[in-house]
Image (spheres, one colour):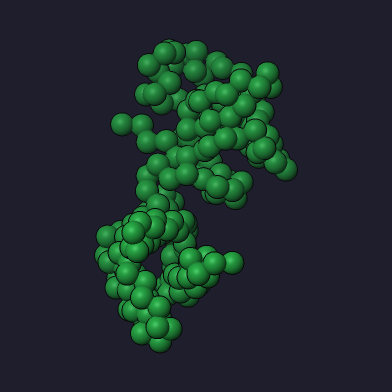
Length: 176
């Protein structure tokens, strides 16, 4: 393990340890360039139906995390030379587990998957059910799908099954 991996692991531990109990780490990303590091932290709020973290919560967490990272720098002797970005996971967040899909199954999802013939498809879908690692989808009744189909055809579309292993990318869909 190199110094970058060790440092990223230690920063991730501090990111998690600094979280207030009502927030959860959705994603952390490190960007390195010429001796600088940008740390991008995306937060989730499980108690909120959309997982929304407000700006005040992001600001308060950012301050607490900065203090923790500054303490790490002064006690470890490691100069992180970092910039910090804290945000909500967002309205079009990527979902990385079946548990997250279950949590947001009442919302339309943008799904990239391989169909039974191996063709990669991108559709806006609604989850009807999840059993083991197989999801039953139908076309979501939303503006995106109504660009190509009538509402009657969307509602009449046959539900279909997709295994979790066939999912390439899945995220919340915002229909504006």
